[in-house]
Image (cartoon, rainbow, N blue to C red; front, top):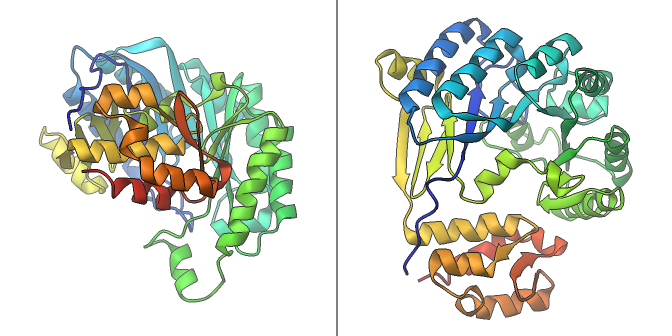
Length: 387
């Protein structure tokens, strides 16, 4: 199999991981620490990392500050990060600049100041508008604070606001999940991310599940909630463009997240952050100490890197392409892998079509809503066909 190189002149995405939280949520597996007093040391190291990554041929059209809890930073500290990114990565004036916000730490004044530093997209980690659900998840905010955070974002001048929600909690009913969705669309966010709750190893929630302190919602019930989400948000005017993501129109899709799904180059900064510029992918130490130590000695804080083979790139193209409702475009697949998608995977595609899991036309192959529930199984079967 021959593979065509990706366009190295593409604009890159910049992701900055803020590895600090006031407390850890029960379900969260993202790297963070609660030693907020170490923020100044982290910011000094982050600046060094940016300048060590600096290259003259890079231009960035997205900046995403995630975490952790980015809103623990003062507006001035956030402004410094923007300035460093602009200096090191030729951040475009029209770049999509996203800031993740925890409702427990969002104020109108701070959000106004963040906006003044160029942030034009706000992603608010609501997770639920139900106080009992928020307590179960270990969130620091309550439902009233979630509503207030959205109000504060609008008052600060943010037009592009996204909300994160989680479903599939133990004993969750269609009615209770629909109540969350209804409250969300009343707020008219431009973007909604609806994630199925997962029990990641080494999290308190996983330990509680193993100890039988509660019983997980069945796969059948969770699948019902997924289908209902698709139908309910579709009826409310939101397009389902990726398994977990919905936007009012294509304009409001997350430009940054689409880079991950479409093999665009991106640079990850901060502890545990990943970067990719095909065929290379790399990741930083999942440790604040390791991160600070390497940068203190003038070297990049790389934990490891890998060179993706042609087969690995095709595997990822299947998984990432089928996650999106645009699906896999035959011309793009042919151009990249010099293979006819329909001929290459013909046997399994016929079976999946009969099952009602995929649909194809002359241009693309995409999963149906039902097929999205079997994404991992479908991709595993296709991967087995790769020579």
